[in-house]
Length: 447
Ligand SMILES: Cc1ncc(COP(=O)(O)O)c(C=O)c1O
Image 1 (cartoon, rainbow, N blue to C red):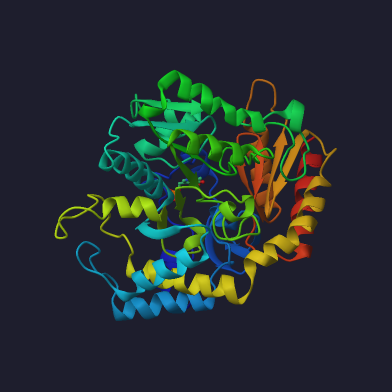
Image 2: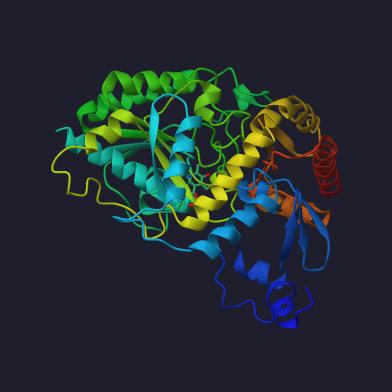
């Protein structure tokens, strides 16, 4: 790009980093040592100093089809030229209806209706609200309690942090939603360290839901929300049989099961959704990220037919659900998502992820024995590498590994002392090797 104004705004180091309050970032550390990305293509970002960075994180679990795919950018730009905004309340545009129809076609069971949002957090709040309203409409308005899980991540809205289970995301923000309880998390290094795929131990932890039912009574519980595979807390793979058991207990007590598939949706595990992968169909499913490849913010909640039908009662001119966003089903997001779904389908990316998963597993488990590695977990094209915390300085080792990987041309994500990996599904085997080798070198050098 030769235009100097454009170059100054998008391609060079900004003069002043202070005004931007960065999200989930150590602002002062970043601003004294910025990591600035200026372009991206395929599996790589380019930094402001012209270095290539292999993307081991699909941006942030979202760029499943790889960066700057031409059909996606062309679809967005064509839609921007045609109609860049249309109101979603009491009005519609064809792309939204076409997209909902395409999406429910690839969903398992009778998840037949899509409600569009702009993010995972909004999807979560939407699903929780639908669950509460659904019970009320059916005359079970006493079902107001929501059950989440320790270490769960469901975004940053008040609903999401209330059912979420990561202390740092909760402790500063008051009392949150009342009437929320939590299942125990499923992480256990003693029993499950270095499991490949789903760990054998832990299905019984789902029975804790029976304990919560006994404590609160089923008539007060609206929904249980879990990530089928917990991502942001540092990759916790569900034990064999765990999700099945949760589904059974929810059915037994008339409790809705919400699966938060913001990370697992759209091929991450080598299937369209975790619901398909595990053969467990939720009543409501929350998605975002891979839905639009991160190209335009977008989320969606999918609801089973009986839930949608319960709302379609009463006078026809009356709004059935008093909920929605100015940018629900935004035309640019819908255009992006259509193009993304084309790529997923034409390039068979979900199948590709499944085919690469054994190679991925083998490569990452090759890090067993590297300095400070106390667990390696994997499923589909996801892996978590847990490092032993430095005594008295939790998260320091993880953050150091993140910075050193960046210096060596690899983008990873870390949560505390866990390295989380989730590359775009277009990754090649030699790039998988590069990820494993870089992490190995970084851990060895830091030992
Ligand atoms: C399972 C899950 N739910 C919700 C969210 C929140 O999504 P967003 O950051 O788009 O609001 C995330 C984000 O990582 C997530 O992993």
